[in-house]
Length: 234
Length: 195
Image (cartoon, rainbow over all chains, first blue to last red):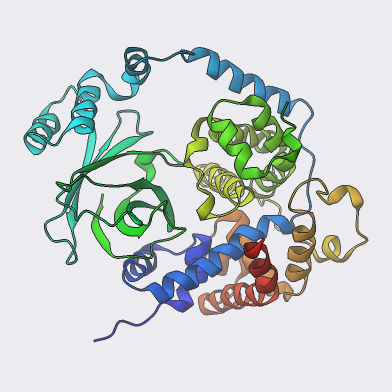
């Protein structure tokens, strides 16, 4: 039976105001309907324009100075010529040493990957949150693992057994929060189908509830346009 | 020596990503008012709006690498961060202030053009005017429902409760409002994409 389109729900979805089942219904439908994704992009373009219609107010004097001062202080706290050791030390509070070791292993190779990950999941000292992503009908053998840092801010996605793509394409990670979809970045896989992505998000990663990976043009898209290959949710 | 005022927004963000404070300052000069105004219209409080604005620009400083040009304009990215942050704060409060639901007041939109109110130096000057006129063309009932959704993050049912209107009526008003805005702004959006 052909699934109904969700055109009527897309304005609310673009505004991030759908509740419960409606949001899930739309998100699920969008994963497989390019027509609705294109329609959603048009609505999202309008939502992006709405703040321009406001009457503007002046911020308090001195706010610019405070922002730049705080930015400068943050930069001073980081090492100007970071080597790997310094970078690891800076990341250590967020990940813990065991977690960082895991990330380095993931970055280098999938050798014994899944065995190591099972060990890490059981190791209380890492205290990392993880989520398995499952392959879809398009890529039933694909698998992924999302590893979130202890402070919940950032994370790593590791994938295995995904098809190698043409150089004009890449995989793109999508994250859902409160009905809003964001991109977590793009990545490619090795000849063995292994790849990883250091995830960067506008909000702390721990706030996102569902995740998906799709095939997109190289460099990424504004919204999912290609086949979904992995998915999972908390 | 680079004059940051000659750089486009995406280039500024790339410079922020590399740790350039002057680029962050230029982005604030272009969009600080908009971010602050949006935070104020959500929170209805100057002190909280100031804190939120500070949060937004510091997030830009830390997470500039999360901006992807193919996902939209920098101003839209900033506004999205500001709106989400402000609504998160709003939802965390037990008693929610009214916020400024008249942020798009018709009289402001159709009133005499205030040269100080148009961001001449940023990309958004003419677009502001077009968006304001499009919003002014909406019936008051649709604009009000849309304001609850956009500035307060209210769900359809919450808006229905706030307005004492049936749920179906609220859904229809928001849907019609968005479609009308698309109709009025679509030509401008298409020509922007071609630039």
